Figure 1 (cartoon, rainbow, N blue to C red):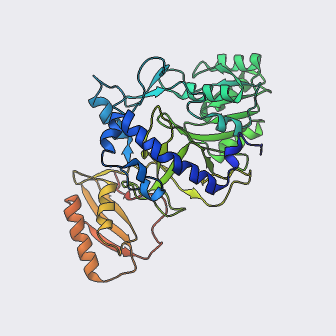
Figure 2: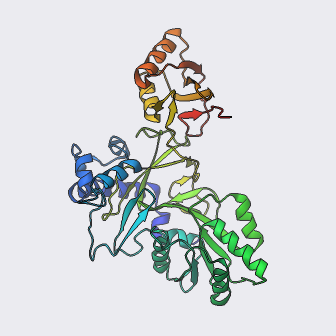
Length: 415
């Protein structure tokens, strides 16, 4: 499976970057003009000046809770909170609802969610039947995969979720080439088939998403003749990254601009450091600019052995929202970043909250080469000023803090 979905996957990295940066000003201008939310968020932005990642990084990050707040505030007049550039009618055949409730539009463009690339990388080819067990109810997952499968040239059986015995029966009788859905449900189907004594020899490949796919489960499928691959996508953005036959991280999709930033900020982290994935999509119907996913990942150095030249990420590595309550006060990752920004000597900072229930203690660990006592005192004062709480300061050597994306570590005992 080293063949590629299209020539975009094997472009020279410089050519790809130039194309993405060339498309960026027009997308930002379009977002400002067609999406009222971005007309407000980017009111002081000159789209013509946003032609590099450095310029993009100066724009504000919009996080999911802000999208939800705008949707809830504008339900009477605009259910999408001003983020959609299209409205109900011929341009929007479907609208979906994700937990929150957050509403997402689906436009008419072929392979709207750009899932075909991931489906192809998982080994599906034109003329095959795919058993799609993602939900078709409320959420876009079923439609995301179905429209991508159609773009590949496949037929889809809309299995949806539940009714395990009927799923087994349909697979046995229709003999699909493979499965798309969550890995846990595929395991349930395979186990039920074994319990019923129904062989499923045609199911030899799978594209899974929506939950963790550990190597142990991948190997479990392989032992039963199923090659499982994973992809990372969201209901807001569509495909972000996908696994290849190399089994080395996830390759970024060709239709998004991906940044990895320090949680609670919009500041890009050095390559290989864990941070929050922030995505700018080139989708003109739903033009999300610097949309914070809340998910942690890191760049995987090097190029995919399959010949795909886009950047790779390590996959999902946890959640970036580390807001915690200390002595009755919420402390946010952005506050930790604000403290660190005041001191050029501080390379990285991590707030560790420890103690037992009702006896919280805060220690700000800072990576710095400076050990003067005055810096610790100033940092302590900044902690009180920014968080309204007292905290200790611990100086540590550069490079000694864990590279796990955590800005706030809750190490308290609740027993």
